[in-house]
Each structure stands twice: as structure tokens, then as C-alpha cells.
Image (cartoon, rainbow, N blue to C red; front, side, top):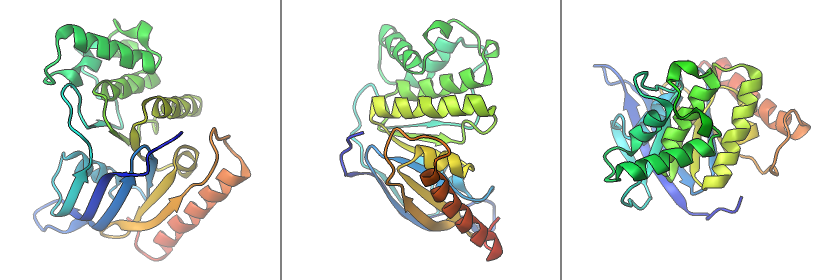
Length: 257
């Protein structure tokens, strides 16, 4: 995919912590993300990967440092959207209504909201499910609806928090390929949190590994691999093994979770 090499996101010296003692979960974290790239964030369970996404999204403010999203704010869209680990669909809204949710408050007419939601459902292959209720969908379909809801606001930056971890292997592979197709179709920048190192090297242009207490970036790996990629090739396996070695060093060094 052709991309413009220009930053869309700059993190400068981020620190964040929970609780009254103020001890940070993240500390001294600086990162620049180029427009149109696919970034995977990996690291031990509990290290702060999801917390990092929430800081970027503005759901929680950093204790120290700054988050700069270098995106033009246009009427009728949002510069950033997030897809959570579970789809978080509203059970009292049909699929189309759930996708329209993120469009509310953008000054769009009801007809425009519907057109945008229908286009997003078409992009994730669920046009014929628009009148269904969330309980009538499979787990993979619910995740597609969550992705459609995020895409409907036409974000420049899409934050994705381990959306496929609870799915079976076949569905996970299918949705990985769907996400790559959507990424290429929209040109959005994606920051994707995963605990699966093979998933990271299959999807991403660049892998950021977090480690330590508090967490920091301990590995920043560029993946100069051609697309489309094939699973279980020697090149992908070598990169995944490299990341596993770095992950092992975290635990051996006593700086894991």
C-alpha cells in the first residue's frame, strides 16, 4: 500500500499510573507513528498495552508527557476511533443502530447517518445483517460490527485492542485478513494491541514491544516484508522467534509483569 511518510501521532515522555500512590504503569514512553502504517503493540499480559491505547484515545489523561494527533478535524467525522476487546454492542439496538451510534453528535442528518452506517457494514461484509439483534450474531460477526462502528466515523487513526483473542483459530485468521483488506481500502493508520506474536508479524509494518515495571518500549522492530503475506513462512517465523527471545529476556531479567 502506498503511504505518505509523515507522522500522524506523536507521544512524548508519557507516564501514566493508577491508584492513590501514583506509581506509573507507563513511564518515559515516546513514540512517533507515520500516517498509513499498521503498528502492532505487544508485551507480557498486564504490562500496559491496553492502557497505552486508552491514553492515546484520550479516555485517560497522562500524568506526564503529551499526546499529539496530527490530524485535521473535519465536520462529520472523528479523527480517531477505538475497537475494544469485546464488541460492546448495545443489546437494545439492532446492528445498523449500533453502527450509527458513533455518528451521533456529528451534525449529520438521519439519512446521512444511515448511509454511512450501511457503507461501513458493507465494508466488513455484513450488509445483510443490518436488521439483526446483537444476540443473533456469532462472536466474529459482533467484532465486525464493532469494527464497522469505528470505521463509520471515518477516522484517520484506528486503535484496536486485542479484538480476536477470544475467537477460534479459523475465525481469527479470517478476521485478520478482513482487517488487512479494510486497512488497505481505507488508508487509515492502525495501532493494534495483541498478545499473539505471530499475529503481530503477520499484520504489522512495525512491532512495538512494551516491558518493565513501569512499562517502556524495549523493542521497536520494522518489518520489511512483502504483502500479501503468507502465514507460517520462514521469514515470519524468524521475526516471531526474535520477538519471543526479547519477551523471554523480559522475564529472565525480572522486568516482566
